[in-house]
Length: 321
Image (tube, rainbow, N blue to C red):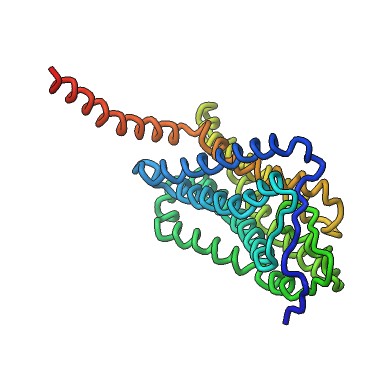
């Protein structure tokens, strides 16, 4: 049974930015809005355009929805730290936030791994792509990512929930990250720190290894394509995925895959900001700005929306005459 005397935690946020807190609030609010709009755009354009009903875009929709959920459990509290002198989060909310943050992180890693496998099949086995990546297979893979993500850290979550918190409740962070929370417990957390680090290393190594193997085959296949334009076209379908993978795995390595996870909080907060605020805003642009299929789908949607409007204006003018 949890014997904690702490009923809420105080989030410090970024106290060094106090003098420019309103500017920070506006910047983060704009970035949050752009993240919602960008990921919402991906969800909308894929759902309304039949030509984007492909496995790659289905997984991209899952990733976009995940990003919206991820930032929506973190950024509102970050915004509150800029406008309130004392920002608190209830104990139950804090523990729930830890569980969902780590679950969403695992789901994202699994989705990126599945997307690498999808590119491997599309480039290395194009004639079998439609046979292997059927709609049912893609749905099962996506559901599997979400289920595994929620189950993967369940044991660590239970251990964190059982920790006693006896006095200090000030978190040197803007959300309930595992390191700062463990540092406040009045129990010995070395074993739990080791378990969390081992859990993070395991999922990162497994997923990254699968991604690397997929791209070794992909690159070797691309290099055998005779025409330069063919090689460029094949590789262009992978560049956005590789960019997102590099950003995410780099951030995770700095934040969690190191001993003593509650050291260097200031550095961790800076890296976490890039991963929780900046990356979700950039990812939709990374996936769409160089994607010709998405661009074409966007203009098709604009054209379909514009045609009825033009017709209505024309009929209005005609009736006025």
